[in-house]
Structure formats: structure tokens, C-alpha cells
Amino acid sequence: MKVDDPAWDRLLAAARRKLEKSAGRLDGSVGLTQPTDAERRIIIGATGQYRSAEVKTLRVDLVELDDALHDACGRGLLAVLAERDGPVRDRAAERADEAEARESALAQARRLCRHRAEPWFTMWLDAVGSDGTATRLVRRGEADVLGWAARVLDRLPATNLPLPALAEWATGNTKALTGTPLSAVVLRALAIRDGAAAPANRAEARARWESAGVIVDDLASQVLVLNLRAREDHIVANWLGDAAGFGVPFRLTLHQLNIDPLTPVARDIYVCENPAVLRAAAGELGANSATLVCTEGQPSAACHALLARATGTIHWRGDFDWTGLRTTATAIARHTARPWRMTTQEYLAALETGDSETLKGPPATSPWEPRLAEALTEHRRAIMEERLIPQLLNDLT
Image (cartoon, rainbow, N blue to C red; front, top):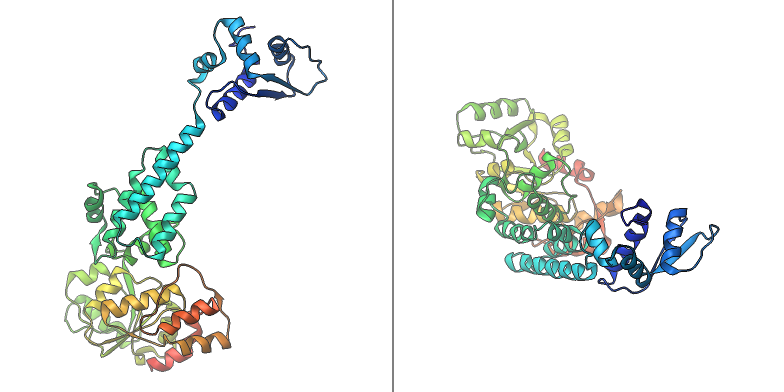
């Protein structure tokens, strides 16, 4: 029977799998279940033993199969397999090489980034190393992506840094962070840092970039405000003044903030995280509410640009979770903000009087009141900001 007959296909495929596991050694045997008559005749010929059609599984030693092939076509098993589908691969050696390349890429990424000691960075490296991401990059010849990702993260957080400029600095290619494996790996790291899910769409990706001070689109970057007036006399400042006169919420884009200078004139600017707070202030207090800025989660580049120009006192709060602690600490360092009802006492009181949810994401500190982070760690519960709306509206009156 000719070796190119389809009756050989399953037997030779099984032999290849066995040989690739044993580095090409002709050890052991292979078997076929529910063999056809043609496959049964091949195995009978190789082993010299009759097998009836009632036998459901037939086995043949690789050495016997090798001898049978030599007799049939003058070439052994390894040569026949190489002819059909290429040389038999040493899977064990390949896995060892992949593991070595993977660990080398992960170690290089760790060396290249100044955040190497931070918990979120370790969580990110552990994740890409254990879930197959690093292995897939190695197999595609893209192991350098992890090193480039570390270089990008090393540059972050930034201040209004255009995404193409960051890509050019890290890789020499202005488009390297737009819809590429590198951008996906970096965004995953930023999501872990922020205690958020990996971005599922362009809007979520933009939010992650902006949380690190990277500008993707100055029109899409926005900040929601209520009763914010500006010192200047130009079109955007006039829009803000008109909206404040009626207590109407207004959205500012980063593009508008960059057209002309805009300086908030409020003596006190309150910052909340959840738009439900601003909606309640607009509905109940209207034009009588204090100036309120809403980050709608992670502060956008537009939010930071606006607050950087403020001359009054910034009062900042977020959810009682790890992200809220991180954004508050950042606001204190970046805008000299004062925490607004972000105390251990407020957290424990809210914990006792209403619903809470499981605390998620990497831990954070609360430098303004270390006991707060300790309390979150102890209770493992998060309190969303909207639970405090009555107290917050009282402060805004």
C-alpha cells in the first residue's frame, strides 16, 4: 500500500504527535480507535499479527511502523513524516525556548520601568506572563512589545502629552499606540493601575489614556461643570456665564480650553466623581449651588486642564474605593486640592447606614488620612459617592 494513501493519514498523524512529545525518539506505540478496514490492514502488515474487525482499538509500536515503512518505500518514519508535513518538531525544546524568551522579555520590562515596585505593575506583569499573552507575543516574534510597553509606562503619568508623541518617543513610530498589540498591552496595565476593566471600546481606551495624562482627542476629552464662571471675556467664557446664570450643567472640551485662556473665578470649586451628584445639585439647588466639577470617573485631560487654571480652593472627593483614593491623592499632589468628606469617619458612617459593594482592584493609599485606606482594607467594602448626596448638597448650598 502506498504511503500517500489516505488510509495512512490518521496513523501517521498519531505518530507525529507522539514523536514531537519525545523529541523524535521511536519509543512507545500509537493507537487508532474505530479503525477502518484499510487502517486495520496497515497495522496487521506492520505488526505481523492478525486483528479481527471486532477489535475497536489497534496499537502499533513506532519501531514496527518505522520498519514497515522502510520495507514499503525505502524511507523510515521520520523521513516519511518530513516529506508529508515537514520535519518532526521537538515540542519540549520549543516550549523550553519559549519559556526562556518569555521570562527574558518579562525581566526586561521590569528593568525598563520605574514603576517596577508598584503593586499594579507587578499585577500587570504577572497577568501577561500567566495568561498566555507573553507566550503569544514570543511565538509571533513580538517579544519586544513588552519592553516597549514598559518604556511607555515609564513615561507615564504625563501632562497633556499627545498619543503620537508618546508612541514616537517609545518606539520611533507615531502610530505604534493606535490599535496595536502594544497599545492593548499598555491599556491593560493602565486599567489595572486604575482598578478598572480592560477597555472594551474606543471611549474606554481614551479614558484610560487620559487618566495617565495622554491626549488622544482634544474634542472628545470633556469635563462636566455646574455654575462655573470665568474671568475672561470671550465666547467660551460667555457660554459658561450664561449657563451658570440659569444653573444649567455645561460640558467643556479640551479643545475649547485650549482656544483661549479660561480662568475660573470661584473662591471654592467642589469636585465630585459621579454625575448623579451634579445632577442632584442642578435639580435641587440650580444657580444657587456652589461651583461644581464632575470627573465622571477618572479625571479627563480637560478636567485637569481646567483645574490647573483655578485660583480658588479645590475641594475633591470620589467614591470610597481604591480608585477614589488614588484620584484624590493625585488631586492633592497636582492641584493642591483639599479632601472633601473623604475621611475615615465618613466612610465608617456610610458603611453602617446603607448598601455597599465588594472592594475591587489593586490597593491604594490615603496620604491625607492613612487610617482611611486601612479601614477600606479591613472592611473590604466600597461606598459609592451617590450615597452621600444629602450631605454633599448641604455643603454646596
